[in-house]
Image 1 (cartoon, rainbow, N blue to C red):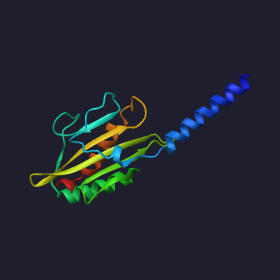
Image 2: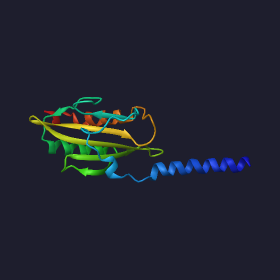
Image 3: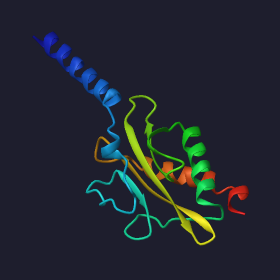
Image 4: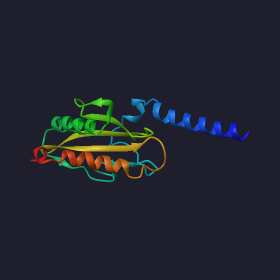
Length: 154
């Protein structure tokens, strides 16, 4: 009986891990406009926008199209894959996964004109769990640091 319960528990754990890794991601659910999202009740997100965010957007002295192109390069180099939107639309949502289990995180970005330049609004959040241990904030900070190179902000 104990062997059966142990095998059942192992099977259930493997099934849960498989679901986390293989669950489909519906673009209609995850592709959001950072300006319009409601702040979640859980602490597993980071929001960059003018009002009601966790951080204010940074202005880059490039065109919105240049910023969107560069952001796409940075996100993909960081291991993210595009789920919805496009560089042409200046609105993209990426999936990033943890290395071992593959927990999915979603990062929606919107590029807007800002004076002579452009700014990035973003909403990064975890799909599963209550806490992300700061991973979404760290990812956005890493992406912004990569964008904040002298060639881009001069």
